[in-house]
Length: 475
Image 1 (cartoon, rainbow, N blue to C red):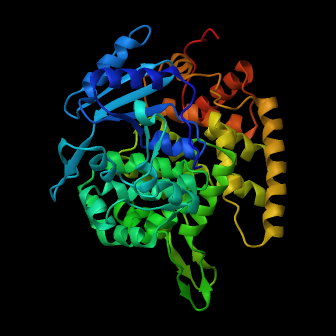
Image 2 (cartoon, rainbow, N blue to C red):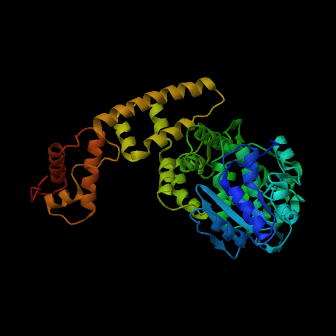
Image 3 (cartoon, one colour):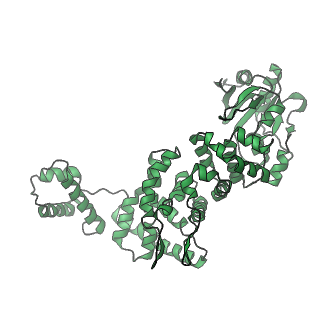
């Protein structure tokens, strides 16, 4: 870790030559150096120069083959170009000062020392020189390498100032701890607790961006435990924080749904990198606090939490500034259906129940089954093993029914248009009722999804409703 070397790539020599020509000192700095030390792949290079970063970027572009386009962000004083698969951002060294009600700093030209001081954590305050006299030398003013070896997240300056100045850094501290499986230094974590209310000045989009990175960590529960212990979760996602706690009445206790949810999330993370499947794990029991009841005979119940939770998903996505598109609908569907396969495990499984599940889950059946397997948590290993073995049987039956009935995303062979033409109806409640009756009959297995049999059922059902066939549609 001490012997960090720049990769063999011409971009570094090109930047060094351009910096010498411009008469400025330049350094590779920040996350790229951190990832080199940790042997993590990275193609995003940050170059800091003691001078004008935009001018240096233009000069580097002129020296590269194909002269890549330089994107300039004047407001931030930065410029960016691409060289093959590498993305290089240039900025002049600067120092920052903050005002109380904003995390946007007042920026002025500074030294390399100033620039390193403004970095969020010691592991990100590392540099490698691109200057002729000490090319490739590591610059580590705040013992970032030592902190990496100790697996510690620590701020270069007094942590209270760091987090008060830019409260998003509190989320970033927890995100890095979660991604890297590092501890947060005690004084740094205490400063997060002391400054947690400052998170309110940060935009929801930035908070959710960090939250998503925590969710995509190898073991996301660690990040959420830190968020909860710091008090940040109660501010940024109170509905999830409400899951925590155990209530006992007459010796009967329910499980802690917060820690259960984190176990389900970790279980999902072991089998899938899909962000939205992981969000489904987070949301699957989100309505349990709202549906919790105690009954003398049966103890604690959470009846209807899956339906209530599904109805909550759009509002929670909106509040968290998550996309209100097919991803939200996917999460909503999995929350609504997450108890269904578990119910099949308990009962004698009928083809009808399997057909209904395939029909409602559609192409998301595999994701649903992953969530349901993850949802089987118990301290009793024998019980978990038995449930998972029953799940194997359910999945086998699902495959058999799907192969014979082709019900994934199925549509009845008799469409609404055929119903209207047959009985000379306009779009109406009656058409919907006929279509629903036909769908039910197919799912129950009393009618095959073939035109002749389905049309005969339609005529019979229409007759029961007082309708008369007017036309014979072309099938």
